[in-house]
Image (tube, rainbow, N blue to C red; front, side):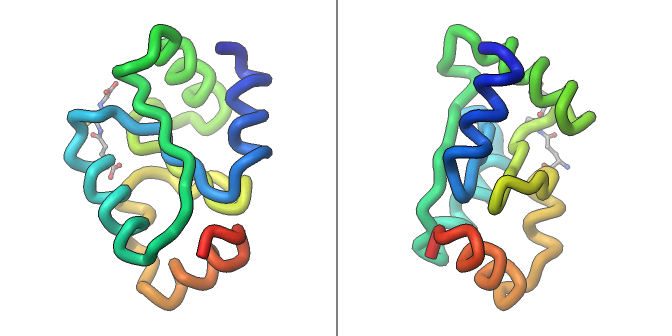
Length: 101
Ligand SMILES: N[C@@H](CCC(=O)N[C@@H](CS)C(=O)NCC(=O)O)C(=O)O
């Protein structure tokens, strides 16, 4: 998948989590978002043929290679630790802005 396609996924969705299905940090992010009933697009890179290419494109775009790689309202948030730094009120506010809740 090209960088342009990765960018389109980010542009087309209020919340995107680039994830790996076995990753505990990704599970923590998904649990947090689900606990707030947020709608989000999740791509499990380890289950996708072009997951490695997506990870390469994400590294180019964000300078971050690890997953989860999280975007809210088309902005790069970072990884799970960055998401968890937001308190519930802050997270709800950005999710609302993104149209996810
Ligand atoms: N501090 C990061 C830790 C994320 C992390 O270490 N993720 C592992 C997977 S569990 C990773 O991306 N490893 C490199 C890889 O899978 O290519 C966060 O909070 O998101």
